[in-house]
Image 1 (spheres, rainbow over the protein chains, first blue to last red):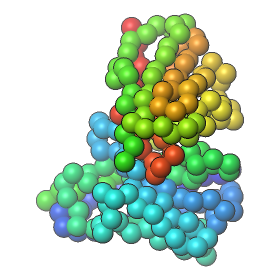
Image 2: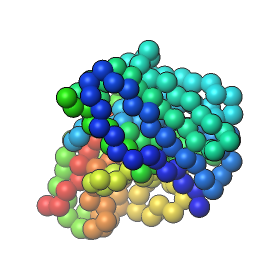
Image 3: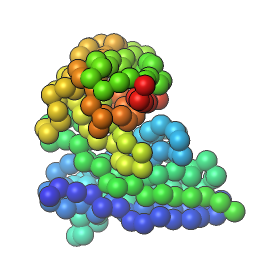
Length: 119
Length: 106
């Protein structure tokens, strides 16, 4: 079945970087953009950006430009999101999603990766 | 950036009730709007895209309407499995979410 499986929880210190992976299966990885969204504890959903797995092209939300880097490895059908210069307010669950086959809403979601930033 | 505002932020309802959630965009987004359901500790689930198109496998008691700046999600007869938080999302220009509407038991 179509699914996205993310890497496990991370605990980082302020100022460090974190890299989260998102492995796709059940479909052609290079056919659909992968997006990243985060959710702070008890809060709403915040979009970080997307990557085109075919070309490697990216588009980041302005708020995260300069701190986020999205990459992919087509040999293992995996997308990555790296966030640098972490702060305590980056503590959140980070999700990857696939856009739908004929629209740009998110039809498949990863299970989420908890990133905790604490000294 | 396009801002999305949902109302109400919380609502209490009973099984069998008709429930309506509103979503307003800060500028016209045509029909490029989606609705998601999220249960505690889980990833959101796509319910509706393009304002009114039901995602495959989603029960027909869910429906969406609207265009431009005003949108509505309706649950025709609330079921026990529907108690959750609902988010609207625009994808006309980048992607942004509403703040969410929590549907609780009355």
